[in-house]
Amino acid sequence: MQNTPLRLIRAVALVAAIGICLPNDGVAQKVAKYGADFLAGGVGARALGMGGATVALANDVTAGYWNPAGLSGLQYPEIAYMHAERFAGVVSFDYGSGAFPISSQSTVGISFFRSGVNDIKNTLDAWDQERDQPKPNPESFFETFSAADYAFFLGYARSVSERLSIGVTGKVIRRSIGDFASAWGYSFDVGFQYRARRVFLGANVQDVSTMLQSWSVNTGELQNIQDVFGDEIPTGGTELVLPVARLGSGFLFPMGENSIALGLDLDVAFDGQQAFVPNIGEVSFHPRLGGEFSYRDVVFFRAGVNRLAYSEELGLDVTPSVGTGLNLRQVSLDYGFGDFAGVVSDLGFSHRISLRLILEQPNLQRAQN
Image (tube, rainbow, N blue to C red; front, top):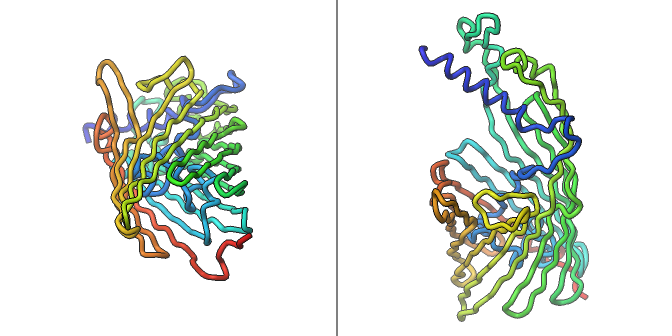
């Protein structure tokens, strides 16, 4: 047990990081560069296998996330679920959604997200402040907690014409760090898609209203941090999550019974993310590229690039992804694999598995004009 004090200090420091991450009343409102980053990874193993380059191509239930206008592509109700793990399984991510045509021109969709780290050890009560060392039998004082983020989306899409559709999504965000702190956030997205015969264009402006995240802190639970480290306990505040414009294009190449789809997207962020990504001042650019080969609309093979970064120390860092899928008419099973190259590979791989169910029943089909 010689390393117990060191382990305790590290664990306490991890919990103390809560005070660093939370806004303080000394700054009434500040811009959060990663305020809703748990949603940035995307959903649907099909889309993620293509590097997330699907803003213009999304036309199933997952469009509620990628571009709400794409919900207009549904002919029947659809249900989807995805589970993913990142950083060698430390972070788990779950997503569920459903979408339903309600008229010949309108579709509604709902989505639920949870991203969290479970069973984090809280060692604050195991530290003897007076003796400045762990208490005897410190493990008996350990407790566990979870840091989890939740989101609920309600989307609506409408076909303006045979080729053009628009959509809007209202979002509610709930974030919690055990009993230490929690936050609520609200905003909405707007998007459009234009579909020609083989060319697709789309855009989705996320958090177009600017998301407000209001944090509240349980100061009583953090008292030991002040006693041990002498730092001021944060008292909460409000963060601003600025809009991100996701611009997309897609191309379809029929090959008899087979086809190839290509997507090229560009995310334009205004929150000052300047670390290792192309930027002009406070505006940063995040390109994504992906492709899918469809064999008789039954078996699919996908590949893409979902992250490009550059630094003088590390050079060009490319994060590719690959995936495959099986479509059995009303059921689609997809698998995506990513984060296996570049710097992020040091943090483990990402496995994404998603299931999509199409309720293809005559009485559920979209009404015709």
